[in-house]
Amino acid sequence: MSQTTAAVSPGKSVWDGGTSPMGVSYGKLMMWFFLMSDAFTFSGLLITYGMVRSSNPAYIGPVKDFFFATTHWPIPEKVYDAIPFVHGIELPLVFVGFMTFVLIMSSVTMVLAVEAGHRMDRQAVEKWMLWTILGGLTFLSCQAWEWTHFIIGSGEGTPMSEVVNGQWVQRIVQGANLHENQYGPPAFADFFFFITGFHGFHVFSGVLFNWLIYYNAATGVYDRRGHYEMVEKVGLYWHFVDLVWVFVFTFFYLV
Amino acid sequence: MTHQEPQIVVLPPNKEKIKKLWRVALILLLVTMGEFIIAFTLPHGPAKTFLFVILTIVKAGYIVGEFMHLKYEVKVLFWSVLIPMIFIAWMLVAFVYEGTKIVTY
Image (cartoon, rainbow over all chains, first blue to last red; front, side, top):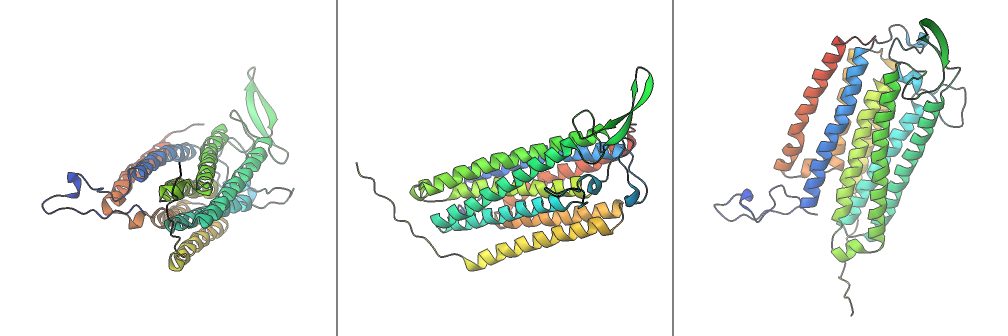
């Protein structure tokens, strides 16, 4: 849409002014550079996770004999093995797989909204924006359940040793908070809260932006403006949120 | 004061483009399902992690290239976004390597 073919007079380069050398509008270019800075922020979080994880001992032995303890880093598929409304059945990574599916699908509906915007098709933009918002809200609801489950904890809890008044005392730890958790070293839960929380906040603000775009499209703002470029800009942000989730999924839930 | 609404021409859906977008979505879902299968079949270790990283970069390529349309932008923009990512690769290698040298327990 904003692809402007730079008409350059002979003897001048695209950088001499009057044209857009990057071939995109100011707003879109700034969105790209903002997303780059955001990529560095998320990388900082994920790489710190990698560093702390590699500084902790890994569990050695067959997966079926795995047990939670502060002395080794947990295997993710043993932590995330529950789905809502079903109790006592181990379904490792099924729920987070569903969340990934939801986010990828909402990225598809977003790109369809962008395509509709190129054609000035207001009704199609409204339809696909609503689907995208629905996908975002579904993802957030799933995450709310996952956090609740993570915080409350599952099973009988884990006996953890600690020193109280110079004595080693065993205590059952149930659930997770920033100080301790039943799944492993305290840093494990800290990273879970920070990384999925920071991503979840991006999804939340993305849903708000998407709603704004839907509202503006529905009230004819972009028809009057003559183009739907705002859908593209917010679309970039929404795809980026999906992109980050792809990395969080790999490094937090699979590896 | 009367306001003249501009004439809006709605074009028909670009069937070919939409089909291509759904194909990209299918690839993303298939790769994710592949990762899911690998997670439960291969033993934990560096080889598995490496495979996951490769598959993740494939998915990231499709999202950034097709969905975010970067593949079809001007080359200057393409490289301006991509080249700084070298710093992330370096940060990853440096910090994870350092991590293996720290003993926290």
